[in-house]
Image 1: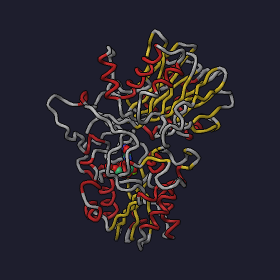
Image 2: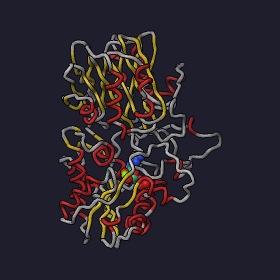
Image 3: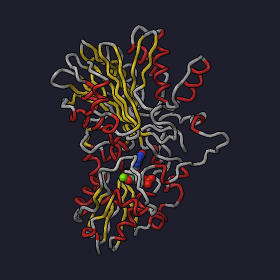
Image 4: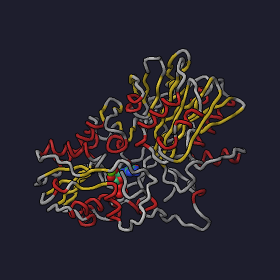
Length: 490
Ligand code: 5GP
Ligand code: MG
């Protein structure tokens, strides 16, 4: 499937005495780069005048010194980094989106995926709206703009729009004089804020971005909450709070977020370690060494090792200089390509019974390649442990979990997966134990619908990807292994 899925990082700064806000956004986005590597953008607000720059590429590549200088200085800023799996022009879909309207202007950055984008878009189009992108974030921007016509303030418009849009959204909205942060009533995606010593408020997807700009964490937004930042400080609007069950995406803890971030009071690193410890209890094996797949499998591997008493070893070196645009001239063989990004430390695995921990097995492509590398390096046994349960259903809330036909756990019975990926055994974290990684009651306070539990919302209807398909194309997957992503998914 090629329809749009957004995996993103958002960053905002509302300052009074600040001048050089573009560089803060740059550092904030740089810290959030793991949430989206396809495109990025920054919009600076200098006393009501907006200047922006967005492009496809990594933060570090897009925002060179001359570019940062050219967007100039200002008091407030909003930034975004995005990863989508669409075949569409990256720059077109880059955010933040700037809307100029007679009721005022606004820049908006969105993380998540709304489930009724198709219906709202159709309604707006029939009403005369013209869309420039194919992403649901523009639908949110237009819904707010439409509500703004009959509202006294931007916060009133956002509050009303939140009654219309459904699904996952963590938003940062900048108007000429204010900045708003809003989180959907389920709280699918994280969003927090803090303050710097110069008084500037910082809003970000994850606490690691607050750290990066030297801000003190204040708190996470509550699900359904809007916070308005203006010259009087921070004011909370809670009309949509507690209208829905809390459903933070559990995969944020397992894979998405950075281990040095804290989400809703839980250290991401600790949650992953706990997942690894649970795996060791559920799937004990006789082995000589535990290794993790960098980067997101490492924390769970440590947890597995501590719980089982099997020594932890460093299994791989990852080449961190590969960007998404890296081309491997003359490289035909897939395994060779994998090695460019990830190489095995032979002495750790040679003649050893290895427990190999990764955060997840989605399509199974990555782990199959890695198992092959470890065997090639001389491991005598390879036992694969996934700290995520088997993916059985697509995610509609902003994670790139594929359609059923691409999910390995839908294509093969679980007792056959070891054979399919070439491992001696495979263990997945039990879906009924997911709550324990953040100390919640079973099934409460998080979304795990991609692991087969109920969807908290209705699922999208309508032909969402009609602009992504060529005439006559069927719904078949067009993600060949090599254009889908560079060699190996992190
Ligand atoms: P697979 O090859 O099984 O589809 O991918 C699994 C690998 O992709 C795991 O190593 C995991 O770290 C990574 N991964 C899991 N979910 C996502 C995602 O939503 N996006 C990307 N880019 N990688 C992912
Ligand atoms: Mg990975």
